[in-house]
Amino acid sequence: MRECSRLSRRAVIGLAAAALPLSTATEASATAVIGGERLARTGVQVRGASGLPHKLTARSWLIADCESGEVLASFNAHGRLAPASTLKMLFADTVLKKFDRTERYTVKDSDVLDVPAGSSLVGIKPGLTYTVEQLWQGVFLRSGNDAVHVLSHMNGGIAETVAEMQAKAKDLQALDTHVVSPDGFDHPGQISSAYDLSLFGRHGLKDADFRGYCGTRTANFPAGGKKTFQIQNTDRLLTGALGLRTYDGLIGVKNGYTSNAGNTFTGAATRGGRTLLVTVMHPAEGGIAVYEQTAALLDWGFGRGRSAQAVGTLVDPLSEGGARSGAAPARNAAQAAAAPGANSGGSSTVRVAEGAGVTALLLTAGAVMMVKRRRRAVAAAAMAEAAEADTEVARAAGVAGPAESGGRHRR
Image 1: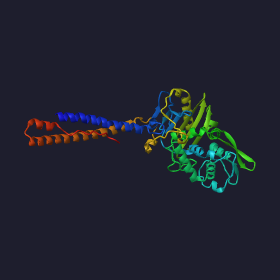
Image 2 (image 1 turned 180 degrees about the vertical axis):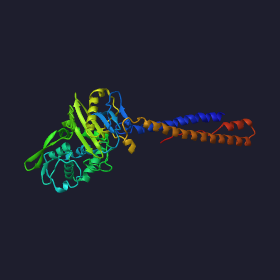
Image 3 (image 1 turned 45 degrees about the vertical axis):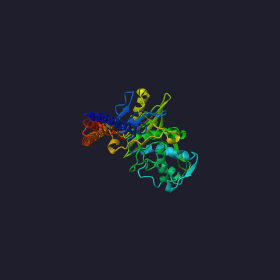
């Protein structure tokens, strides 16, 4: 009885100790998400504030303080979705500083031959000479894929530019993003997330040229000879159109649309000395809903959202001293397409089930160990009894047993 009792106590202690690394490893894994563990959860994430807009139908959205990087609220922040022309923010983050804005370039036929059919265009003509500033106005105001391709060829070609954009995304710790083309046009495998697009917008707004281009409402564009035509920014919150009013304090940044991606938008506005950044991807209604939902989130952020406590953070680039974070957890198609109102406790349920399974395994192993030790104890007693007739010696031999060597279960 003593031997059995002793083993039971030790087994309990061993099992308790074995459980500690499991929970520690689980928490370490959870906090490895870029920007914080809560940003990987399904469902709306918000703390310390109420009154979020009711009609948020986007498949993914995020609102953050642009200066501090604190994420005030989010939904499916790391959901991987087609970005459309909002990916041009990463293009600008990568290429913008490589050429002086006054530099002039004469466009060749080969510079625009690879522009995808159906692209948005600013109207670049081979044989005409443009300044770099005019090309960037074509990128930001009209979302011109022709302007993107000209700048990409100036940068060494499409493949070189795509590789540099992917490297820039890695430096920005935008690990949800996979770049296939520099213009954001629909291509298999080209994805990003509300979190990553927010990183691109926040990084770009630190640059005066980027900020100037994305906030320009109209510009005159070369038409050949001394002729020009006016181009207008397609950001409806900046210029007002389709029944929308301009948003007070808006400073940019980039909108996008393709038939596959639907509508996407990253917008930033400043009020009372505070700048908020919002990304909205794929609202169910399409059309102007992306602007309406962005404006509603900005209104919340400047109002009730003032009391919100951070649920995550927009991390800094590695090249600027940002702490290296672990990769965001892989998401399958169902997770990436999670609808508003999804249960936010999925990860906790998985951990509980996982912990229960491992605990059951440990309990089974402990029971087998106890049986083996009891058998060894009986054998030792029998040997002692055969060697000596002394009852006391036999009893002593029966109690004695090998010392238990407890170990911790590691994952």
